[in-house]
Amino acid sequence: MKQTCLLKDCSKILLTEEEIKVRVKELGEQITKDYQGKEPVMVCILKGASVFFVDLLRSINLPVRMEFMAVSSYGNSTDTSGVVRILKDLDHSVYGKDVIIVEDIVDTGLTLSYIKREMLGRGATSLAIAALLDKPERRKKPLEVDYKGFTIPNEFVVGYGLDYQERYRNMRDIGVLKEELYSK
Ligand code: PRP
Image (cartoon, rainbow, N blue to C red; front, side):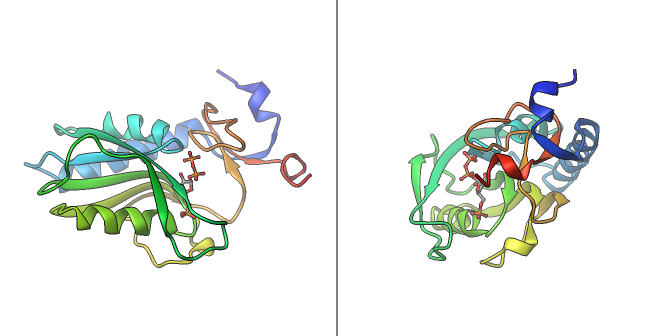
């Protein structure tokens, strides 16, 4: 299905539905290998990661558990404190569990650094990060992504869960948003 009504707002497609599908399958296979004999708790950071989350989970041949967390950053985007507010917390404890945090994108790294610290503080046995996209140019806090989909340049991307003012999340491809749409 061509989503012409959404694609018209993009200056180019960065990653096609097919490219994403292939890579997500590879990440799922890698996680399956690495967690043999385990039942990892997969934590989806709402909302952006939701699309990647469901596709990734279905590429994993292990009995995983699903958890959801919603966070919002304090202060403005230039604030490097990295303190985030938890809007919706996990339903179950991660104490003694192998946790995999699933994100759509790592930008400054502040959100994930905080969540990582928080999960380890709660007694998770191990912690890994799966992120579909990584924008290393924007990093403010060093952060290793264990399962990375793609490294991308510093461009405004939307689709496959990523939004601009809550729009474009349902786009099947990932595209670069036309500059005139957000620079007004
Ligand atoms: C995005 C993304 C990460 C965070 C990454 O979420 O999903 O959670 O920003 O940025 P950072 O590395 O600079 O901390 P956003 O706040 O846009 O919310 P959303 O997922 O609901 O779109």
